Amino acid sequence: MRRYTLKYPSYANQALILQAWGRLEEAMALLKKQETLCLEFANRSGLAYCYWNWGLLAREERDHKKERGKLSATLDIFTELNMPRERDALRAELEKTVAADRATYKLRKSQRVSHQPPFLIHHPASSESCRLLAPKCSKTRLKFYDA
Image 1 (cartoon, rainbow, N blue to C red):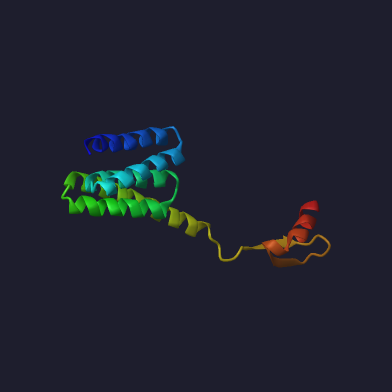
Image 2 (tube, one colour):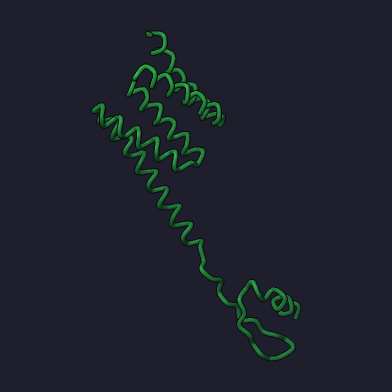
């Protein structure tokens, strides 16, 4: 059993290197191996670190649901094991996730438009002006710019 305890932290280190190189799929495979070993040998702290790395990898892959899930699981384990330094550091990571989610939500909300603003188009043939919605007035807009 001793040789396994030395081997799976190596998976985490290799995964971090692969993540830095941009080889995210390979890093994910190594973290899954580490998770399997941690679960097999009931190493809760090793599992927490595995999930922490996994959450950060999910952040890089922009998988926010998986990121939040792994980081929350990590927080639960660190709280259960009474590891305050790690717990506090992880809370900071979760706050970054929440802040990023809020920023993304605000950006998406600002980009959403319920209707397009009307344009005032002048018809050169007649001196009338008509109010048309942008998607419906492409032909009219061409006449306006041609004039």
